[in-house]
Image (cartoon, rainbow, N blue to C red; front, side, top):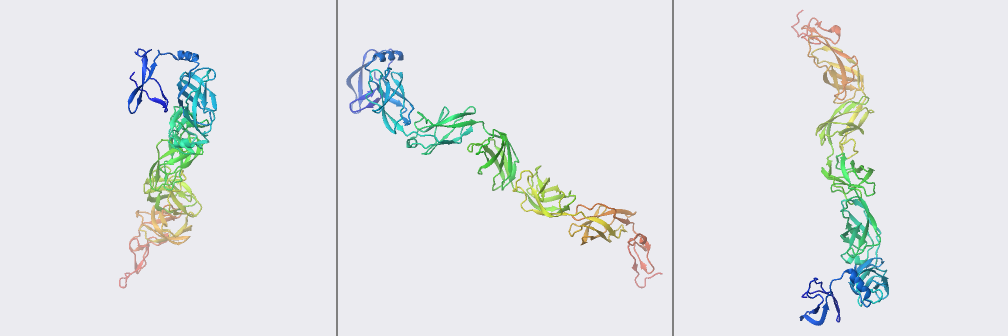
Length: 564
């Protein structure tokens, strides 16, 4: 025919070849075709044998002929798979020729073990592997009826079968990609042969890692959530382990929003994640950028809570979630690490303990324009008003008297201790001052005279003030019940003006008005003086003295200038 075919088997006295097919109109049909053998040294050489090709017959015709061929000797050319577990029960596909479908058709495993075979065709049968110890066994065929055996078998390797004890994780996303670790132990042949596969349901994938106790495989994708069997094959997928674990494909985890979206560098901010398909598992965790994962608290399928880990410097990171500890979401939600606020000064640094309501201005740095920006008065949080990144204001609350800690808090709801001012300032809650009396109670519109204020709850501070109507002047502390102020001038010198006198101990908030008033009089004429009382107002200066306009007292004339 001019067609060369490979030698299937050979010994020193016998070779096995499969004749090539020929077309139905070949001139060699029903004619003799000479057989040549290729010897390496002399090439193809005739051996004096001929082969006659008969017309093609269907499987049914071959099957019918085989029933009449009681002397057919079976020939085994291949067994698939040729590497199976020794526990038995694997289906072996035996290929060859001359198989006869009669009672007694069987496969032989070595000289002692025979199992019934299932006839497929004269060239194929299937038989289950028996339970055998590890080793290489020759598999042969015994025809039904004649009980004639194949003269040669085909080697099949049996290894110590293995069981799958567990696999991790037990679930993953439908998109696949989950790195699944399957634990054995596994026989040495699995480790030495590069033919280990994992089967997820009906899909086979090659293992990427194999050792005596563990096989690692990557789960393939599926179309919809389902639970599948996970098995292992050591013979390139020809047969799989009898034992198995299950793997559940679940909907992909999705993060829709996080709150808050920022926190301090030391971490500890409680971040609420809103999304879909969260699951209450021991492997539920959050990942903030490249930091180590943090465990998550399950609230519902749409809400979980995580605490941010620390970070070396400010900046944004991507936050993702894993329910199985291996696969993370790809939602690309951003979280920002910020420097904590720094306080440089606050004014005023004191306020009423009973009333609260003091508007405090804070100067510093790293203030953020956030609705949750707050001030802490001894742990009591009040919302702050952002002015710029170095200035904010907030209003004090009522509090027991005393000196207490004041801080700026970056987020009043996060509970993040690292996102607040590290160096606290002191804020003093004082008892409300009050004014009882003043002396003198009247004076010139030019001001400049000292008055003494009597009252309660005064204390020594640079912020101590007196207010005459709307005019403020510094006060000098005498004791807790007395202070002294210099009366400021009144711009209206044309008439008598009466103003309320109040006191502030923080330079901003003043005591309530309580009918303690100071009366401004217009200036006295030349030659007259204005004393501290009403009856002394615009009094003529005595003989031998003089007084200028607006003077509050008279002065002796110099010697030689007296005019009676």
